[in-house]
Image 1 (cartoon, rainbow, N blue to C red):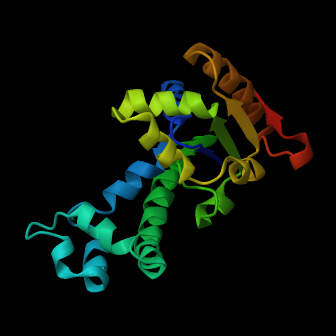
Image 2 (tube, rainbow, N blue to C red):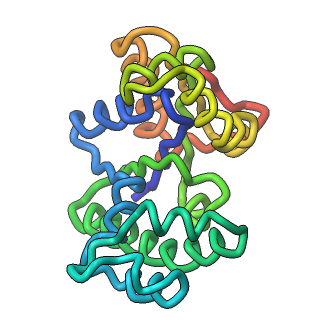
Image 3 (cartoon, rainbow, N blue to C red):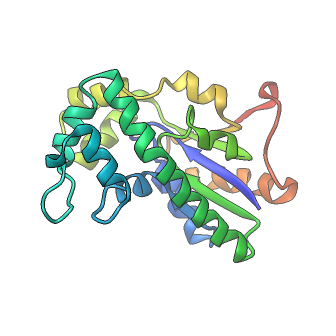
Length: 211
């Protein structure tokens, strides 16, 4: 089974691409959702986080006070690294378990949708990486419409994310989502054809395609 990562910055339409793949019957794992789930009550990560960031980062029911955790974890580079060291192995374990289930189900292709794939250990596990992009101001407008925030805040959010050129350097194929949902689906079908025919769309960087 080939594992294909789907990544992109906020407002690019990555979720629309994944929803289309899910509708087509492909196994699709939401890595961002998994990252949120590892902070739910009962997660083995919570006790470890309390040891580092304080017992009060979770209430008596085991519910993480996410804002308090974020304030403490992101206050220093060391705190950010500690948060990653604690949560990342559990995130990867859960993604691997979902991929194993898809493999046992006979899937030839499985997709993992994640805003943060490039630069993490999971990047090496991907047989191909699809990058969904959109023009900067188009992304800003989509973020504003989706989250109800001001354009300035949307731009600040985008500017804090992994640079587009870094993502492009890691990607196998780029889908430019600058038109309609139907147009994005057509571009995705083209990439799917390559994946299904060749088993993977891995190509030398000089032959990378932008659709």
